Image 1 (cartoon, rainbow, N blue to C red):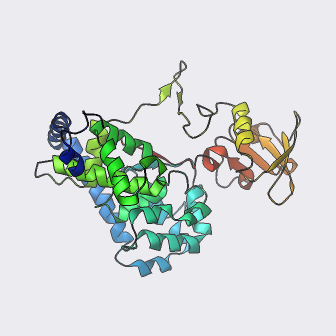
Image 2 (cartoon, rainbow, N blue to C red; image 1 turned 90 degrees about the vertical axis):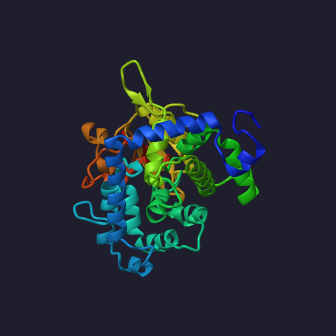
Image 3 (tube, one colour; image 1 turned 30 degrees about the horizontal axis):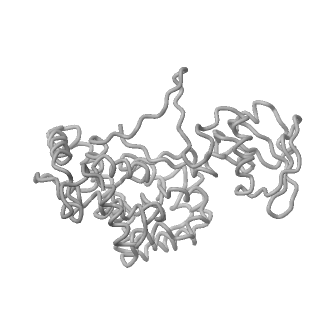
Length: 364
């Protein structure tokens, strides 16, 4: 164990921070609670969180979940559960969504979503059990690092988890605070496993337990350091890494889960990614690639011949004036078509399908 993490073995067991890290954290905390802007932001976090739970009190009254209808669950033009989830709570652990696919999935499979929402508010279930339930994978856009699921859990259990849903960001906080060994010890104690072998939900549970216990032990002021306040403190103490900026000032986000280092910037990148993941996307066999429209012929899981056209942006399909009847699927990186577009059902956005398109963003 590196000596710079903790002062003694007892400190490791208690999750105590090294004195210089603790002092720096306390100084930053003191500066923040003296800032009217910080106080205002945290108060707004608490306010909107309280309003949401009062509007949807499912933890206290889980039977109310049965009263959800497709319209009350999601309607883009009216107030609904996901409208408030996305926009009413946008500053409390912000999640960026590139389209409304996750909400449509939950609405279209509402019975399944109701079962999972009841799981989320079930006090008898652990944090990781709520997140790791395999049924989430049946809702497209809800898998991957489970950012949306984690935010649901946070809303109803804000005393137990931070509004920080990206595993990578939580790991950055652990590293910055010197709590990696403590997290490894907690993983062994709770799950008899190494951190690297834990599921998404188990990591989330361990990381939150270690971060919250350690930070709360260090803070000494009478200020109410609840999870919204602690999350803002940690983001201030350990700002998230900035995206890479190329020479033309365009921001490009690294892709950590695939061999392609950066996200695609053109149609060729989309073709490459599809070639790497065509089986996962439901096309086990590629029959033909051609220069004429459509770009590819493939077989789907049911053995049907499918005509596929590739675009970087889905709207480019219309700009090229292709005949929608001439292909079965339009594979793109960014789906920028309006929901009402007549070709919307043909779109396969790799940004969504492969990477679940949900990214946690810290508030500026």
